[in-house]
Length: 250
Image (cartoon, rainbow, N blue to C red; front, side, top):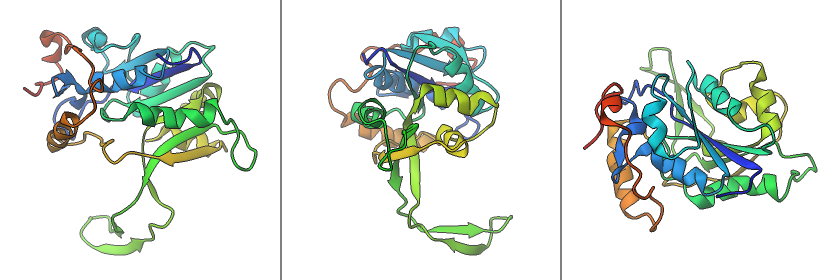
């Protein structure tokens, strides 16, 4: 359990349109994907809010969060719903995608440390957010509207692939979301309002479940995870409720 000034919002409100069903409830090494994310967040947080698909809050009560709230129509709306459940006195809020079940406790600590221990950037400005990211290794090319012809190659110098967890000064994150704007990434909202966002190295195994094949790779990685990384004994939600979400992997 982390310091009382830190809470986490684990976003698990997606419908899984590309995956074919809500991926956050499929099993990874015997526990729901979302339970892995909640367990990791709890190691560094005093409280965890889980954002669930609307109507499935009761089904998600067994996943280990302190509070379960309904998601919104967009990711940003879901984060806002989760943020509303975080106590006002909390100083730092972590936001983590449930679809990244193998983020380590060390990675959570890495994004927290600059906010808890070194509250200013190298230029002396307050750090408002910390993200984790990896350098882009693949060649990036821009294609036409039909996606059938290359129209340019993107210079990848300075580009990074952003992951979660991400850490924020709570009052800054609340202000960033106050206008109701949408973004695929909360740090983007903080950057847009002029906030200082620091980057720390991400983890190669911190993969996001996007397609069913990703789960097989994560199973192999989970098998090699250190003891205690898995959510011990975390049961899946009641099968009658999960049936409404789609089939769960055997």
